[in-house]
Every structure is written in structure tokens, then in C-alpha cells.
Image 1 (cartoon, helix red, strand yellow):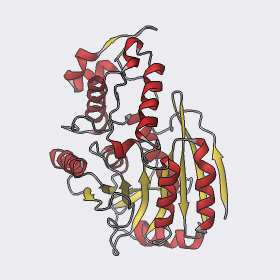
Image 2 (cartoon, one colour; image 1 turned 45 degrees about the horizontal axis):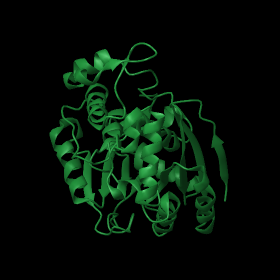
Image 3 (cartoon, helix red, strand yellow; image 1 turned 90 degrees about the vertical axis):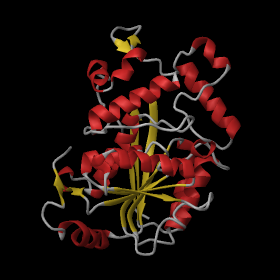
Length: 332
């Protein structure tokens, strides 16, 4: 099984719009509601209280309006409000996979179809992917509330119209089964799996995060600053078990997805994941390191198709598309 060594991450992806500090002056102009959360930073400039879930949600709304062209965005109380910069990094690295490491070969346009496993109520990945690459998305989730919330975001924003479909996963233990139709072909699948193994571990992780944020007296009673329902934060066996299930199901549809990918938060999960990929005889596996501030993670990608099949896929799905529908990109 050919394997590419991890790429060293020196920071956010070069195409990530969020490489610099947040420009709160411009963000508050695009989203005036953010202004009441902006406060002086101890080291100079301004910031928000990242331990405040309402402030974090409002910042996300401002980022999505200002940088990604939305006119409305919100999530139900308690649902995951993921950091936008990290999600953007994942998609840009995934785009590099489709371009085979050549930036000018990254495909843009609606001929590219992406499956988002666990789209959540926030619909972040489809929003970024539509804005940056004009891709189409299918977002799947086991939560009816999350699917309906994501559909509401899509219907409220004209830029997403006709480009994002949300499907309910009927089985809480299935990943591709039940949402991928026999006629579906996806150029890419993406996933941000639940990485804790229990509710207790998730709560402990929240407590550590709040301490890292310098949350002072609030650390005695953890508050999910980025939110998250149980299924978004933990599953039995943690992320390693979840990804192993994903790998097993991917092997049952090897020709329906060009690149399967997932975020892996814990380095300790990699041995079990790599062993599972070896067992299903993936044709190629890549591990791409990513870094956002003090947080390090990695994108694991695998394919069951060989080089000739990859070339045929690109020619059939992207290069043969009518002009203006799918084209190579020189960067977003």
C-alpha cells in the first residue's frame, strides 16, 4: 500500500482567508451584532471572549457574512459552532488532493461533487466549498434538527441555491450506508468525526479548552464555547473507532468516491486507522498535517483507484465538462 509521509504544517494553508488576525473593524461593519462582544486584548488590539458561546457564534456569523457572502446564518442552541479557519484549512488541503498537488490543476465548478459526513446544523464545509471552489455538496447527518437547520441556511442564502443537498442518515451507526445512493459519484468525501470516547471525556476536553483560554473562575462549570450535541462530540471508541467504521464502509463502494478523507485530531488514533486501511487494501493513503494556532491535527485521505483510474476519472468528470462549468484553478 503506497503511503505518502506527513506534510509538515507551518501554519494555515496558503489559500486560507484567515491566515492573519481577525479584522474586527471590518467584521463588525459586516455584522454589527459582533460589536458588543469586542473588547481590548491584553497584548494590544481587540478580541472577543472565546469562552462565551454567544460571542463565538456571533463571530462565526460575521466571518461567514464578511468572507463567504452569506446574508443569514444561525444554529440552534447547543449545536456545534466550529472554528471557521480550521474548516477552511481542511477544504483547501482536500482541494490540493483533487489537483494532485498542482495548484493550477485544482478543479472548480459544479461538476465537482463532495459528500460531507456530519454536515451539522452549521453547514460550514458546504458554505466554504461553494464560495471558494463553486463545488456542489451533499451533507448528511443523523440529527433531524441539524439537517433542518442546514436546509434553512441553504434556503436563506441565494449563493447556496441548487448547490447543497442535505440528507438525513437514518441509522445512527452508519456512515455511507443509507445516504449514498447506488447512482452517486463523489469526487471527495469529508468528515470531522466525533473524537471523544464518552461524554465524560468530552466534558474534560471542554474544561482543558477553557483553561487554555484563561477562563478564570468559569472553569469549575464547563460551558461548551463551540457547542456540540453528544453525537457531534463523542462516540463509543472515539474517533479511531468511528474512522475504522468509515473505512470498512468505504471499501464497499470503492469506485463511488475518488478520495475519501477525514480529520484525525489525535495522533494516537493513527496506528489503528493505518492498520484498517491496510486491511481493506487502499491503493494510496496520504496523511497531511495541519496547524491552527496551538492546535495540530491531520487530514487522512485514501483512495481505492490507481493512477490510470484517477486520470480517467478527471477526464470523464472534469475535463470533459462544458467550458465554464468546471475549470482548473490558479487559487482562490
